[in-house]
Length: 372
Length: 104
Image (cartoon, rainbow over all chains, first blue to last red; front, side, top):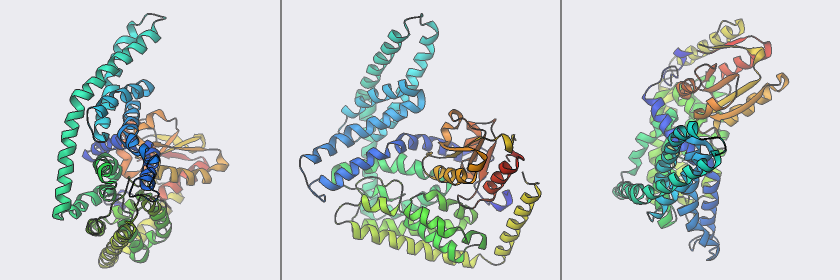
């Protein structure tokens, strides 16, 4: 199979596995809590003054949810990943210190201090557990967590909160410059290839969503949520593979289109691109087109759409933004389709037959039981 | 390289990045195909494979090295396509026939 797959060799560990791992941990703190993000996003879309059903009382929940609930959930989950329930508890305590130390949604701070606090507690437990006398487990366990939790909250309040606040300011200003100068579409040059390497969650939840949340808290929406999650480029690619791809890939493309565009599982199109890496150019072109359209029409989403399905997109679009959002998705799909279609047509010569032969040989191998 | 007998596979875990998206989809497909053999198919984030009981791990090739790191002693089958993958079809056939399954 190795000769059949030009990239994406999983047999060795390298920088990609390391980056994936770090990103996976970041995403692992956010993804289990997406339901809470959606609840907050829906409340925002419905009840803020510019929403569908403006309501002063109900919109009071919007602020506490993004400022308190979401970062604490992230800190809780981050702590749990490192040190189980005790890690989750200390992660939550420490996150409160970070939250109170600043005035912006502290996703990045929570991602840092939640696991850090849990890791420190793990080390403390490793020292205390062996020397704890019988019958004192609960006393020592509760107070070691309580005392170290208090210290971590203070550290978060005095140290990590302000530091992350400064970093967020720099990131936010950097993004603002990119948007104002029209360079934001260039982000697709990095984002689209990284997606194909399964860094999609790392980028979206580890980097873009925290920046977007700060902007969304101030203005009610952010374009940051749309840079990675736009289902348009993948849709264009899959349609191109369906109509002009190698024959063995065509059969599965329609099913993949449904799963990708409606179901929002973007991973399903990555293998097609891994089989024809040059097609990533189409994804970049489509992605950049989408971002440029979103920026030009001034649209954003109220929260991160997860999964990146057209339904999640429509739900998270604030009033008056639907035209720009749909236009961006449609244009990005069209551009990525056209580029991918021509790349596939141009690089076809004879490869179809080779692919088919390889596939036939492979299935023959399997039938005879020699494949390993 | 690790090997497991197809007949002894009762517990398959499909891993992906978050353990909530593509792995669930593949696991659902596999569970249907292996219902008659009484094989349980679950899903997990690749980082938490070690805590998930399994006889056999399936994950996309792009996450393969991390899966191997997480559970070095397990059979980790890497697939390339989320729909209609030949390796997955092979694993299903070998579990049904009870033949040995080994990874790359």
